[in-house]
Image (cartoon, rainbow over all chains, first blue to last red; front, side, top):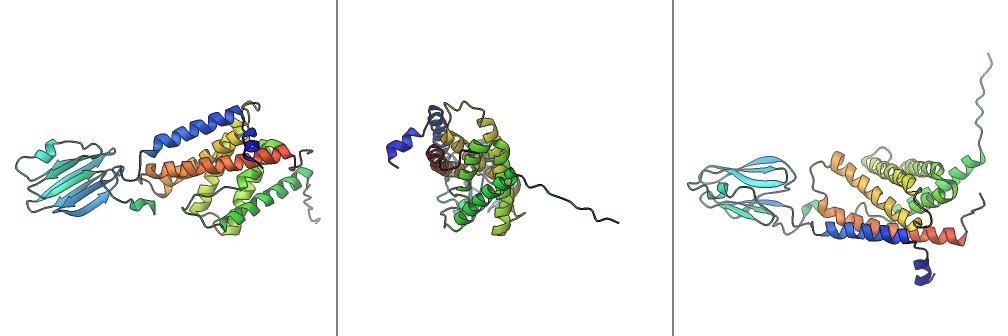
Length: 121
Length: 176
């Protein structure tokens, strides 16, 4: 069958369906594999890599004590930290691409900085 | 005591549905032998049979053929009552539902390709729904969604073109 014949098999509504579904895929495409991860590092080493979809609280031990990281409703924040100035706690909820660093306790939380996605397999 | 005799009437329609379901099972088995890049992405060739049945014998026959294909295909592949089977059943039921609704769309505007793409999207959507709610709750499926939907778009388009071509050429036995 020639390509021109194949085009004749499509009706107007079919084009509509094809266009609408292609638009849906295009809209979802950006929500890619490296945009939606939470990486917690302690002293420069990866302590935990997780998804912002899993509500949980994580206790990260550092030289000063425990830093508490909270993941809730797809958002991430540092809930409490033993550091003096509480800079990372005051930063609040992290948007995609943001990083909070609790320097005294050497803990950092990154939103969406994962290089590869282990979920895929 | 007289032994009771159960006489099962086999109608012409029963035979037809059995034959069509057998064709669909054949396609499912053939497809299982093709190596595929990603688990869950497959051409869904059996949906060609479902669509042709829908067009020629109506929605009820399509439901029969599709469900028989899912159960018999799972038995043959050894996946009966496993998560794979549940995903297959969920996808099958959801796309049958959508096909039942889409069959009422004006025939002049919406042909097999539109229905095929809609069914393919519903199929993978329901399967990912099962994965998200039951198999791997909490796992973020969004990054995979576009890949799976893209595959569904391509396979839905190709299957739809095959159905449209077969219906047009009249080799599918339109006399029934």
